[in-house]
Amino acid sequence: MIVKNLKGENFKVEKCLGCEIANKKLPVVGGLIYESKNFAIAQDFELPINGFLIIFSKRHVEEYTELTDDERLELASLINSTLTGLKKFKVAKEYNIILEEKQNYHFHVWLMPRHTWMIEKFGKVLKNIQSIFDYSLNNLRTTENFEQIEKTCEQIKLYLSNK
Image (cartoon, rainbow, N blue to C red; front, side, top):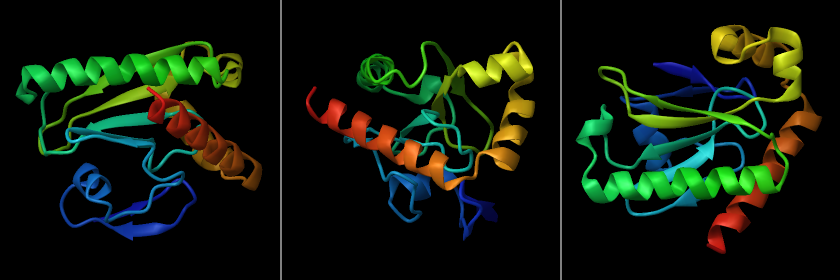
């Protein structure tokens, strides 16, 4: 399957986007922000929304319930630490935390910022998430936005490395 990254570049994915990112077969804007034995954190591969980070398991699981007790504890800690850093650097005041399970798809957690522009243009973020995604693809592929995304990735990478 062919996927388009947030800059609009096409990449071939053999089986699973999450696995290929975890195994460093696909370049992510900002690079991997954090990596442990069980998880990795990166800017969303496809959507140019600053601070839209994905936490994904390094082994291929499709459901939250497939995680071990230790993995669930680590995931909770990673969500907390990452959100603390994002808020410290004022990327956004509030976030939606979305655990996504899909059949034949890699389990991951979205840390979806609720930026002011999202609320002003679309109202409730989760109710209008597809419109926000479409807007970002059509309007946020700018050099200035990519620079901000990379800056945020570096800030969070440094913040998490000092934890």
